[in-house]
Each structure stands twice: as C-alpha cells, then as structure tokens.
Length: 101
Image (tube, rainbow, N blue to C red; front, side, top):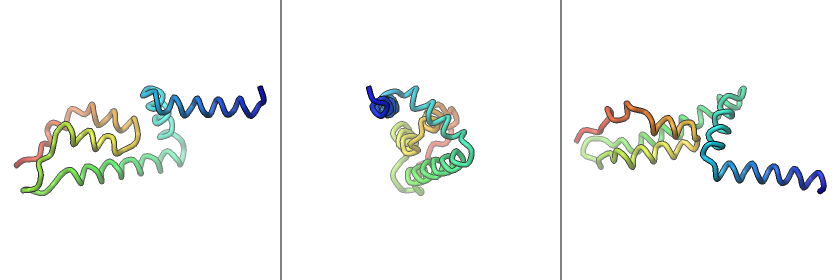
C-alpha cells in the first residue's frame, strides 16, 4: 500500500467517524474549542449562532408561542457544536425561561 493511500484512509476514517459517532464528534468539538486562538474564534462563532437562533425563537408578546421541546432542539442544533448541543439539552434552567402568553 502506498503512503498516500494510507493517509487517504486515515482522513476518510476521521470524517466517517465524525459523521457517524456522536462520541467522536463530541471529543473533536471539545478539543477544537480548547485550541489556542482558533478555539476562541470557534467558541465565539458558536455562541453567535446559538444566540441568533434563540433570539429568533423568542418572540415578542402576541407572537407565536415558544415550543419548549422543538425550540430548544433547534437552538441546540443551530450551534453546530456537539459540546453546545449537549449543554443546551441538559440545562435544567431552561424550564424556568418559558415564554408567557
């Protein structure tokens, strides 16, 4: 096997696991957030996506009601980062922030 074929296999395996394994994606995302300089940029971009989506789902009075389960899943998924998705899903305080009609 040529050296280039081996590298191609490793890269393919990495992306396969990234798409198929939640545990692997969580580990990669957690490590990427800890990288110097780049981690800070990734964290700020993730927070920006999270808050923008949250802002779209929290409507002014008289607007559509906040869907507790669907709304949080959309906000979590919009972050695109497994660490933020897990944190949003397990946050016990989210039940206290219901939109009043």
